[in-house]
Length: 227
Image (tube, rainbow, N blue to C red):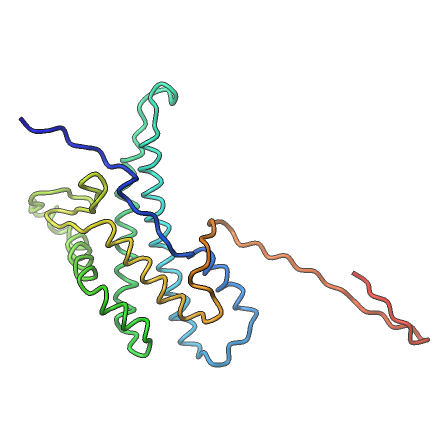
């Protein structure tokens, strides 16, 4: 007799370490600070990498939040069964796509020591991610030809959340988390003034407040400050 399939639970989906939201805020403030050593091309690469890994981070975090909501769902309290878990695949798929793009870009940053180290340290995980992403990217032609094979046709959590699965492919969730945090550290290294080990900050819109003061000097040489 087969045992009942155990549900995905958030305790098996490790949270991210990196302060990606803090890095985004730091990047915004860099607009007001001259960086003459950086070429326009370098700035564009840095900004694209930050945008891409921030997207991956947010999708991963949202997928984990949806599983947490499912963990705490209460049919009597909520007025019926709520299936947050049905929205998880969309978040994982977007996370996989964004993480893969960032990893492929980093592999080409030969001049960056952190990038070279990342590509070497995470070679196996990057290959696993590549296999899932490539299979997922060609799913449209396989569905049309009725060649879907076995396994889930969306990228989902499996093994109670310990893995992500697609068709016959799978990858440990902790390894996907490690890739996202690894990319974060590479991108953070491109912002020398940022503390890569800073405490995680919550997401949300960036707010900029400014104050100004004026010094007035009268005909007698007396000065006073306004503002």
